[in-house]
Length: 288
Image (cartoon, rainbow, N blue to C red; front, side, top):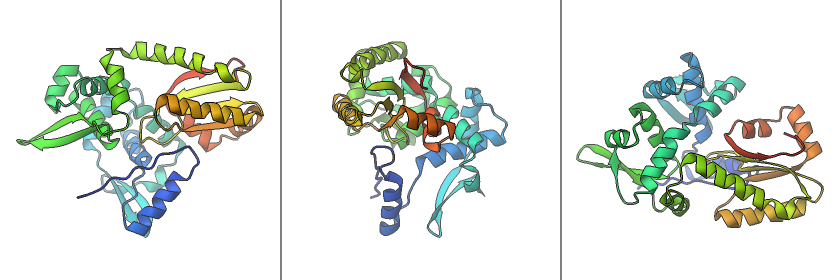
């Protein structure tokens, strides 16, 4: 029986460092999920595909084989047999990975299908008919959601069936969202009202706030908080947000001066955050 171990926690806490050390000590394979997205990004760039060409991106996934291997204790990423590790941190690859990794319409439809029908399993072609999306896009998002642990797969009579993973920490929140039959536009609006209400306890200390659409298991921040010198109060506020969400929230708090400096220096930590899908910002002084 195999095991998949995921480590979550605040940004900068040392998740990757710990994961690499444990993997080396125990002989496990350390998988950098971001490297898989970047590997596909290299593939799209080689094919001359633009980030907005979603259908071509979905089709190109079918002829991309990403392999992660460990050689001399170092992770190596192969694309169709070619070692592309040296290309993964290029800025163009990062930009492509960020923009091509999200297929929100298909992903939202799949999540609604599975989490509004808990216990029911579907095979791929059945899913394409139900949600009325192209099979390439569906297969790609099924792979993403399976890797994240939100859905699971099993084989029966030579067909692969997919269903919601009821044991995932986000299963209950997902069921609550889709049980209300809220469409994507309504979810964004409800979220916006919630954040406007949530910042009231720290309205004097908070200068700016940005919320990302980071998926469970995906690297990066959920919240970027810019505040004044009263960081302790902002930290306590962020902890109350975690309690309300019912899950760990990855957040970073910095002063305006620190943010402006790091932005001017093209700090990788900030660049990676802004490459995520940003769903909400509160920025009355235009700091961002």
